[in-house]
Amino acid sequence: MGPKSGDGAEPDPPRPRRRPTIQDLARAAATSPSTASRALSGNGYVGADVRARVLAAAERIGYVPDSNARTLRNRTSRAVGMLISDLRNPFYANLAAGIEEQLRSAGYHVIVVNNDGEEEAEVEGARTFLAVRVSAAIITPVSDRAVRMLLNDGVPVVQADRMVEGLTTDGVLVDNVRGAREVTAHLIGLGHTRIALLIDETDWTTGAGRLAGYRAALRAAGVPMDPGLVVPTKFQPEAARDAVTGLLARRPDVTALFAANNMLAEGAFQALQRAGRRIPDDLSLVAFDDVPWMSMVSPGITTVDQHTDDLGRACARLVVDRIAGSADGQATVRYIEPSVTFRGSTAPPGAVISLAGPGPGGVAVSPSS
Image (cartoon, rainbow, N blue to C red; front, side, top):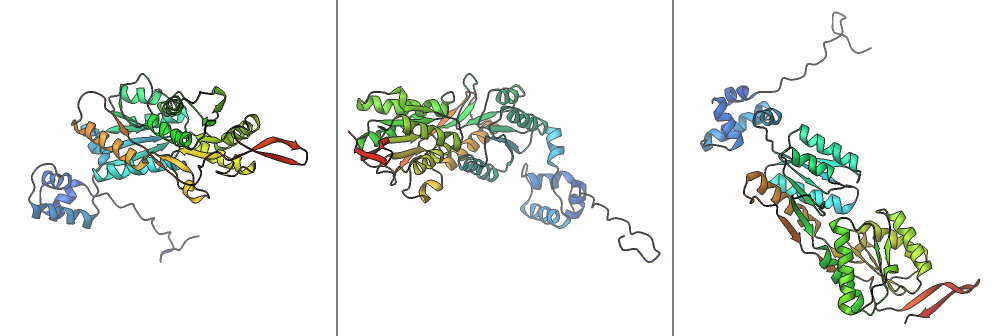
């Protein structure tokens, strides 16, 4: 039993405080509701002294503009939807941070939906955006369904990092071909000719571009393309680890490995450790997408840095331009130029461990040719 009042009755529960209205604010600031509204929104002229008085009164009485009411009146809002594939992945977390930082500075707030790379969750996120009438949406698309749903309702869409084929929208992409070509050329320049590519998909612009860049570097150097060195796997470290373990057993002649994203690089690094392969003495390792752990291990991993924060900020600027009508009528696709960060995980080909070994007693080490 809770405490009782003097007459033995239970005390009345506290009543929720009534939310101040624009009329309450106008009375507190000794001005009209329309003037108070202009002072808060910045739309229309209001004297500096009046604006200061209104802002002070708003803070004093706890007035917060009702964005939902404004959205219903104008069918617009200061909210932008962001559909992200996996916020646990540092790449997507940094992308979201860059988007949110830029939009916040432009006076927008962000509604974030994490879909874990699931198509149905992405579609449900798009429904949420439509329900709250977002002004625009930024999506790392899993399929075309959510993008089409938003476009059909007139919501501008910016596709980030990758784009769905056949849909005309704004987009911001990394130059995946260039990044993959440069890091593969780095390995070739060190003397590697048996370079494996660990990749999870080639249907999106990301994977297709990285495969194209890998092939372009081999072609430019006159190194024959070996289809057996393109190793498909799933977008999971565990799957990548198993794929690399199989590669090492199948192709002991491989001297370098290029992991097409940070998740695959994590699995590859684990597989090499478990196999007792020394990086870079026995096998060089490079990756696309620089994330913190790659500079914390020893040796550090040579990577293609996508400048993910810049990618997010570019998406946000494109959204703001589209909402304001300052972007032209044609869909705009902008590219972020990646750069290679060189660390200690690459070296000229050295010794290659033969997994077959000389017999039960141990493994053989032979110089690579």
